[in-house]
Image 1 (cartoon, rainbow, N blue to C red):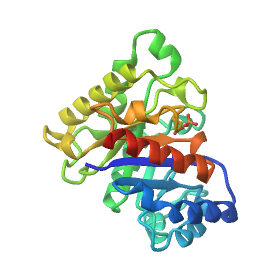
Image 2 (cartoon, rainbow, N blue to C red):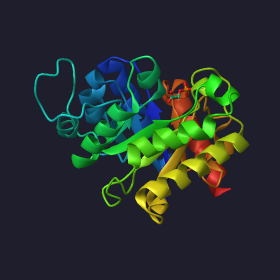
Image 3 (cartoon, helix red, strand yellow):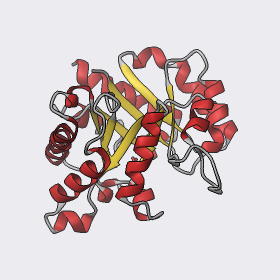
Image 4 (tube, helix red, strand yellow):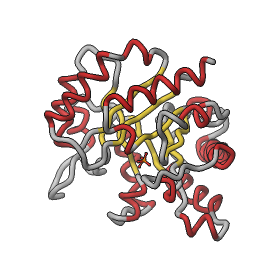
Length: 255
Ligand code: PGA
């Protein structure tokens, strides 16, 4: 399975800035061969990004969706509206949505089902906070978050799903998880997902590591047996550093 590297821009970039970034990385895509690259701009920059990625294999992702198709939900965006803009992936349950914007496991589950129903591939984010880790609750948290999202889901519909293991304490802190910790968490995530969806399904799932990934350390993560890519925040904001990071990941797995 190809590794998947996704850029999560969070609340950064105007349409013009997004278009400039997308044109720049699509010019260099020859050097990303064999890697699925996804760019997740804010909603407002999706059309300009799509236009700038025309003719390129780089895919477009959104950072959130609502679960209803339409109705009185001021400020929300429906999955089919994202499809309409050419979006293929959607980040769900990012720790900033869970911890700053109050999204709970139930909401993440509804969003995931809605995304799958409309043919979007979810990038489901899970991960423990620093205090949960200190209390020795990492496994319990992963079990709860992954099961809440996937239990009894139709395994066919969930094929191709991406799960990002992002320890909250590693996001934007410059303090990445150790490769050993990332591997044990990713392996556990695969195991829980397999238990929820039926064994064999984990063959089609990809687990990313996320949290302070950069060109200098990505090789350590993508070489791990249970990790098939990365979700990248800060180091995805400049085309040059994101491009270097993809090339470094590719080199690490083809070495
Ligand atoms: P970071 O963010 O790479 O800046 O740590 C990762 C994320 O939030 O997805």
